[in-house]
View 1 (cartoon, rainbow, N blue to C red):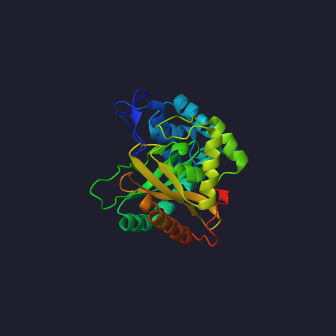
View 2: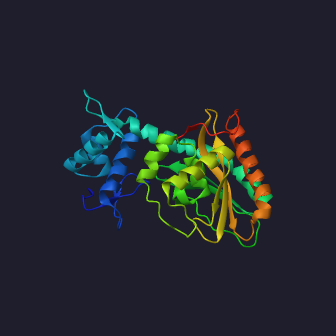
View 3: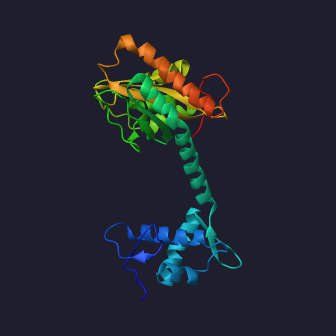
Length: 280
């Protein structure tokens, strides 16, 4: 029995099946991409329509959009569809992130063990920073950090560290477009004051969030570089403010910086720990 356009698509099978909710066109587009990706010799419109169980006109319009986006391409002579160059670029970026996280895991564990606090690693995601990995510390009271969480760069240690990799012109442009929200009374919202703080971060290779994102939390972060001397991530810890007082910041900062240095060396970095070129 032929499936109808009123049905959705599962991302796992690539077939049209009954599925409540969701964005129908997105489900269908994923099914089309999967079918094209599995067709080593490319696939024509009629065959593609039959495989995903959609009308030819529906398949054509979705495929045309995917071609326009660059995630699919159509051979000019045979008109067969193949995966596009942008899909390879997206896959490469995801692979880089996975490899970074795989490499970082033991260093996150060591950092959490040495400090007793939650450790985490984050990458630049345009106007935000995203936590891609974490390791819980041994303290009985811990700061909760969710993998995949997006954070405002101006109010976090991880974010300020990643911002320090930008050139002055890049930083000016980004800060002009960022909503510098006053998240806590300590959040820096003045662009000029923030630039001064970020320059200090770049100079000292350590960033602090002193209750700027969460009034009860203090965070520290250090830069992670790859073999091309690009800052690809920031690694750090979070703890209740009362557990990392001024008497402990110096020792904890050194531990965080050592973890960042060791991870950078594992990634092939051989220079001094100074911000060079941004990965983004």
